[in-house]
Length: 110
Image (cartoon, rainbow, N blue to C red; front, side):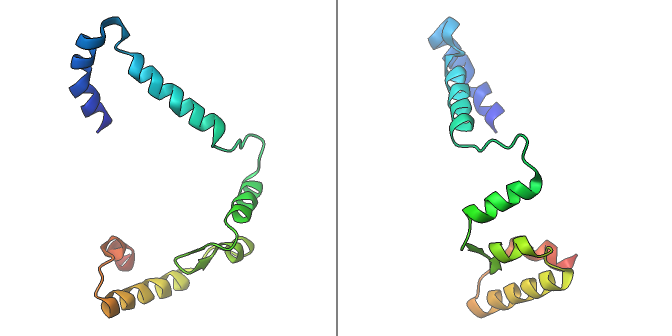
Protein backbone atom coordinates (compact mmCIF):
# COMPACT_ATOMS: atom_id res chain seq x y z
CA UNK A 1 0.00 0.00 0.00
CA UNK A 2 2.83 2.39 0.89
CA UNK A 3 4.51 1.74 -2.46
CA UNK A 4 1.28 2.73 -4.18
CA UNK A 5 1.19 6.08 -2.37
CA UNK A 6 4.90 6.74 -2.96
CA UNK A 7 4.42 6.04 -6.64
CA UNK A 8 1.35 8.22 -6.69
CA UNK A 9 2.76 11.25 -4.89
CA UNK A 10 6.48 11.15 -5.72
CA UNK A 11 6.20 12.70 -9.20
CA UNK A 12 4.34 15.71 -7.78
CA UNK A 13 6.78 15.95 -4.86
CA UNK A 14 9.73 15.72 -7.23
CA UNK A 15 8.31 18.49 -9.37
CA UNK A 16 7.57 20.71 -6.35
CA UNK A 17 10.70 20.02 -4.29
CA UNK A 18 13.25 19.25 -6.99
CA UNK A 19 16.56 18.18 -5.48
CA UNK A 20 14.93 18.09 -2.02
CA UNK A 21 12.26 15.56 -2.98
CA UNK A 22 13.79 12.97 -0.64
CA UNK A 23 13.46 15.32 2.35
CA UNK A 24 10.04 14.02 3.44
CA UNK A 25 11.40 10.46 3.38
CA UNK A 26 14.37 11.52 5.50
CA UNK A 27 11.99 13.12 8.01
CA UNK A 28 9.95 9.91 8.27
CA UNK A 29 13.14 7.90 8.69
CA UNK A 30 14.30 10.25 11.46
CA UNK A 31 10.95 9.96 13.27
CA UNK A 32 11.04 6.15 13.11
CA UNK A 33 14.62 6.16 14.39
CA UNK A 34 13.68 8.42 17.32
CA UNK A 35 10.68 6.22 18.12
CA UNK A 36 12.90 3.13 18.22
CA UNK A 37 15.56 4.91 20.26
CA UNK A 38 13.20 6.39 22.85
CA UNK A 39 10.25 4.02 23.27
CA UNK A 40 11.36 0.53 22.24
CA UNK A 41 13.20 -1.42 24.94
CA UNK A 42 16.77 -2.60 24.46
CA UNK A 43 16.84 -6.40 24.32
CA UNK A 44 20.49 -7.15 23.49
CA UNK A 45 21.93 -9.61 25.98
CA UNK A 46 18.51 -10.42 27.42
CA UNK A 47 17.28 -14.01 27.49
CA UNK A 48 13.74 -14.86 26.38
CA UNK A 49 12.91 -15.77 29.99
CA UNK A 50 14.03 -12.33 31.18
CA UNK A 51 11.99 -10.65 28.44
CA UNK A 52 8.95 -12.68 29.43
CA UNK A 53 9.43 -11.72 33.08
CA UNK A 54 9.66 -8.03 32.11
CA UNK A 55 6.48 -8.26 30.05
CA UNK A 56 4.63 -10.07 32.83
CA UNK A 57 5.73 -7.40 35.32
CA UNK A 58 4.67 -4.63 32.94
CA UNK A 59 1.25 -6.20 32.28
CA UNK A 60 0.57 -7.47 35.79
CA UNK A 61 -3.12 -7.53 36.58
CA UNK A 62 -4.16 -7.34 32.91
CA UNK A 63 -6.49 -10.04 31.59
CA UNK A 64 -6.72 -10.74 27.86
CA UNK A 65 -9.67 -12.86 26.74
CA UNK A 66 -9.96 -14.48 30.16
CA UNK A 67 -6.25 -15.38 30.23
CA UNK A 68 -4.36 -14.34 33.34
CA UNK A 69 -0.96 -13.08 32.21
CA UNK A 70 0.74 -13.65 35.56
CA UNK A 71 -0.66 -17.16 35.83
CA UNK A 72 0.35 -18.04 32.29
CA UNK A 73 3.97 -17.08 32.89
CA UNK A 74 4.25 -19.65 35.66
CA UNK A 75 2.56 -22.44 33.69
CA UNK A 76 2.77 -24.15 30.32
CA UNK A 77 0.82 -22.72 27.37
CA UNK A 78 -2.86 -23.68 27.17
CA UNK A 79 -3.47 -27.24 26.04
CA UNK A 80 -5.53 -28.20 23.02
CA UNK A 81 -8.51 -29.02 25.23
CA UNK A 82 -8.26 -25.62 26.93
CA UNK A 83 -8.25 -23.90 23.52
CA UNK A 84 -11.22 -26.00 22.42
CA UNK A 85 -13.08 -25.06 25.60
CA UNK A 86 -12.30 -21.35 25.04
CA UNK A 87 -13.52 -21.56 21.42
CA UNK A 88 -16.68 -23.36 22.55
CA UNK A 89 -17.32 -20.58 25.08
CA UNK A 90 -16.73 -18.04 22.33
CA UNK A 91 -19.25 -19.81 20.08
CA UNK A 92 -21.78 -19.89 22.91
CA UNK A 93 -21.19 -16.15 23.47
CA UNK A 94 -21.77 -15.54 19.75
CA UNK A 95 -25.11 -17.32 19.87
CA UNK A 96 -26.16 -15.78 23.19
CA UNK A 97 -25.32 -12.19 22.23
CA UNK A 98 -26.01 -12.51 18.49
CA UNK A 99 -22.42 -11.55 17.63
CA UNK A 100 -20.11 -12.83 14.92
CA UNK A 101 -16.45 -13.35 15.74
CA UNK A 102 -15.83 -14.73 12.25
CA UNK A 103 -12.04 -14.54 12.45
CA UNK A 104 -12.09 -17.57 14.75
CA UNK A 105 -13.93 -19.85 12.32
CA UNK A 106 -10.70 -21.29 10.90
CA UNK A 107 -9.53 -22.22 14.43
CA UNK A 108 -12.70 -24.17 15.12
CA UNK A 109 -12.43 -26.31 12.01
CA UNK A 110 -8.78 -27.27 12.54
